[in-house]
Image 1 (cartoon, rainbow, N blue to C red):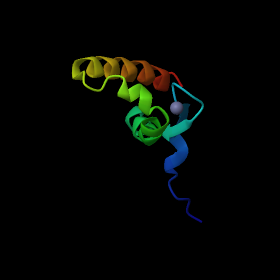
Image 2 (image 1 turned 180 degrees about the vertical axis):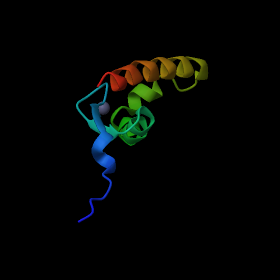
Image 3 (image 1 turned 90 degrees about the vertical axis):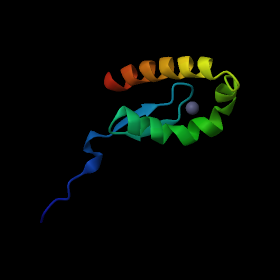
Length: 75
Ligand SMILES: [Zn+2]
């Protein structure tokens, strides 16, 4: 019997940085995409804080991505 290639092998499960919700992804980008719908609903207030200030939003997003990517790579 031939085994199917298991794509799940390299999946990492990492918690949301604000709560215990878990998202999965093989890469940080995948993880971020998996987390996005959760973030949009559960942490909409966090996103809302920077609406109307695109520069600040960009800075915060950049810092958030760097921080979480480091967390992801360390797993
Ligand atoms: Zn969360």
